[in-house]
Image (cartoon, rainbow, N blue to C red; front, side, top):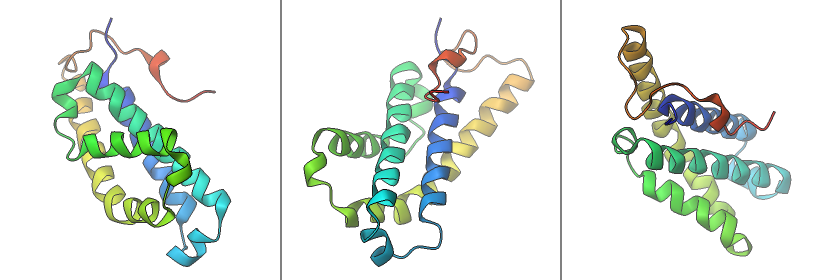
Amino acid sequence: MKRDPRVCLQDANKAAAEIGNFIEGMDFGTFRGDLRTQWAVEHGFAILAEALNRLGQSSPEVAAKIPRLGEFVGFRNQLIHEYQRVDPEKVWDHTIDDLPGLRIVLQSLIDELDRDASIGKTPPDAEAEDDSSSLDPF
């Protein structure tokens, strides 16, 4: 049974929203000096991109509608595997420049799939919703 793509989209959108909450009211200088917030934002990006990666594997036709999805997954790989070379300015730039547009796309796709589900149309590549795939550990 394949995963409902809305689960991955919702996980990514939630992570993006939390990243925004973490930096609310900050400028780059404040962010650069706050290691706790840097790590929280980096973790949020790791979750966001892992959800997008899972979406690409389970529902490639939905994932194809997300511009620059591969760049987000690549950024996640850098955060995880090359953590010693993470540049806070690059993290900040992705947060400020890329997340607002990504959130619009994610919410639009969630809304589209919700509309389809409300009229009985099965989400692409999903036979039934499988909440066990959620990235929420609690």
